[in-house]
Image (tube, rainbow, N blue to C red):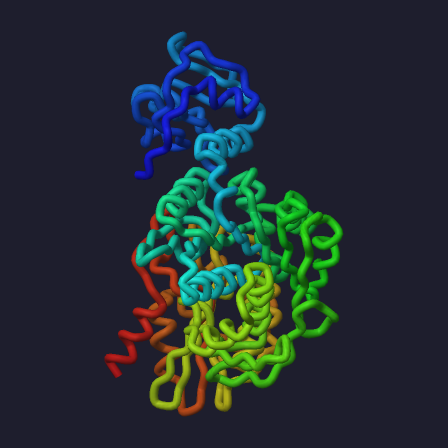
Length: 480
């Protein structure tokens, strides 16, 4: 673990504008997990979606916590500091900011925000800067990466203590640039509150996470908040073609740089070609070629160009980098064998699923086969939308399981098929469904395997069982 210079509780309370406490102990750790408490810890009892941190205060104290931050006024021990607050998440963010010496101010922190494309954009940026020997770190859906290190994380944007921990590592390792995916849920839960973003990239906005946000307005607001908080000296890189771009531009004080393909903007891309082997486009009087697949990846690639302007990098360096950059793991990954092609993609929102299928139709010279499911305990509205779209697509359809969580897989499939009027294959076991779809592929056919990307698990009733679409496909190919 990275060691932070010791600080006493009252020093931190003063910086965070909290009342001073009686036991002014030295802080050895700040945590939201009672199991991780050690002697002289501060434990913040967060009200989570499924668990209430107040249930674990006793365990935290037993393990050595001397200060408890909570919204409850229930004080049991005179020797323990209780800091009563209205918003534990916001207080956590403020305490973490000062405990970790406001480390985000000492780095070039770039966030990527949007419904789709966050992983691809942040990953391209990370590899581009490392290509230029500008040491970088990546924090996102596929994990945390820096200097040949790789760590798994549970959420697209981890908890704020994890973020500060890795930002502190970045500073210690003399890593200057950090690229981070910023999810709407992380914004709502204050996981990036108080962080000093030097630049934010907006990719696009479409329906997702309505099980959490309830309305599109609330969902959009969580996308806009980080832009509202940007300083005038910071940068907002905005997809001008997205319908909601004007709202973001209106609400930010940062320097706005726009990109797109259809509207007048600072970085206008013009398509040269889209092939099954890659894409090509013009921008800033240069021709860019890439192994990335699909028109939406032109947008993803374009969004990086403004970083060249901001960080004084000649555009021609990006031309060279992009021509050799390989697709991001789990995003439009193409596997070909015996004149048959498979594309694996993480697409799980309605809009992303639609885009990938349209690209499949554009690229496929034979028959298109689509295999997908929908995640359990997530917005149910998209299931019918995806089903309606599949109903209109000239393709063979396989419906199967995709992280059912605490729902029954057949209930989810039934939600997808409710408006489908054509015959589809329903095979609940995803491995069996993939094998059956592969078996029926012929020359020039395409199979789209959607929803899980590079995930290495299947989430069933709270347990993540080992599972990988990639492994299933490669195993089948090797056996045939």
